[in-house]
Image (cartoon, rainbow, N blue to C red; front, side, top):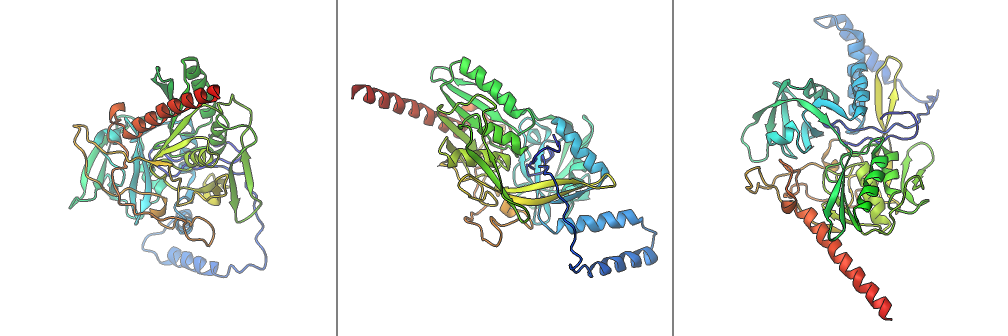
Amino acid sequence: MFKRKGFWVAALIFGIIVSVVAINVWTYKDVSANEDYSDLNILMEVMKTIKQNYVEEPKTKDLVYGAIKGMVASLDPHSGFMPPDAYKEMQVDTSGEFGGLGIQIGMKDGWLTVIAPMDDTPASKAGILAGDKIVKINGVSTKDMQIFDAVNKMRGPKGTPVVISIMREGWKEPRDFKLIRDIITVKSVKYKMLDKDQGIGYVKLSQFQEKTAEELAAALKDLKAQGMRSLILDLRNNPGGLLNSSVDVVGQFIAPGKLVVSIKGRVGPRQEYHTSAQYPTYENIPMVVLVNQGSASASEIVAGAMKDWQRAIILGTRTFGKGSVQTVIPLSDGSGLRLTTARYYTPKDISIQNTGITPDIEVKLAMRAANGKKLPEHPFIREKDLRNHLDAKPGEKNLEDEDSTYGGELAPITPLKEKDDTQLQRAMDVLKTWGIFRKTETAAAKAS
């Protein structure tokens, strides 16, 4: 998934599904001879003192790696340093299949926090909720733990156990959850006809991978053959993925040549990405796009473009708000540096960072446990809650701010039945009404 052509965008949110990272063509900038790096003397002084006086002789590489991790961690929540083993693990992730628990995680107040569990995974089956704090992994505290270190601890061969200690809003003390790792397969595209009589098709995109656009084109062709006249595109709990993939997805619903997203960093010109004619385009089919707080990065690019071009109705709750671009830079010893290098902007030049995409129709999803009992409301996590998060634009305060403690909009513990999925049902109602309106409009035009 991490090829060197073009930008590859991080999804965010690193989770047990581990976020997908954008790869830019990196141009190294020569360090100016006039720049003052005298503070590096302090670093060398500390390393020398440790090497000479520490109670046990440390390895120089361990000290260097530790210093780099601390340096990068001070920047923003999505930048990070990957030792060689972690960098290789990231590249293995591109297969879309790995042994783990099925959790998207972020860092809030120094603690690993669940963004959303994936449906039908060990995490969702065990009752892990969005907003849960993971305070220990196999008895080891996660306070200020690096995301990659946490991921490595929770991953492992299928069938092996891992104990995570969870602290949840309203609990007096953490509770242990023993989960058995399973193969987490991220199937990018799922689809079906929801209502054949009304011609309502349904496509769920779980992640933006290399072949997502190709698989989407095949799905739309099949749905069209089955009589699809309108479509629900479900991006809920989609953490993002590849930038080019998201652009190609938008290109199947908007005419070629339209701006999808632009990227602007501190260095270099603004880059723009436009739709192409690579795949058949369904420009006139009525559409609703479903989003929630787990829709991040590439998902927000798609939702933002569809909203700005007034191509579809966006329904659900405000998205995660990850509007930053990460560049993966391979280093000489086999390690890697993931560095935030730019921000995303929608076609109307609106920053996604922190604000996310506000739906045209807000519909909260009531949470229910496996026994059908409605669950109490509790906080969830968004980009603006992450430590050292970037502002919407350089030097500019966020356009909007919202309390992250309103409830009812959480990732389901178990997959909802269609009749209980209030967001999906509302989307179907919108499309049915849309069809009635179009028929009335057509009849009036013929009468005139």
